[in-house]
Length: 64
Image (tube, rainbow, N blue to C red; front, top):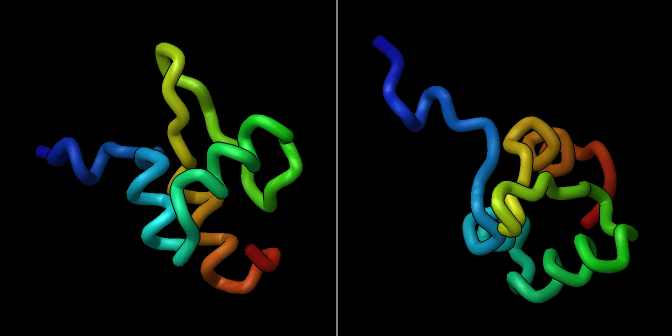
């Protein structure tokens, strides 16, 4: 049986910011202006950052 962590496909702004070595407000600005290297999904009014996109960015996809 898979755990919830294995099923998770997106993380919060705080977790994504820490992974990217950025401030959470930077990611919020990316979302607001739609000009960042990755775009969040919105779940019930909250931002969620796709793990697949974070991994691509961390592996040299685009510069943060």
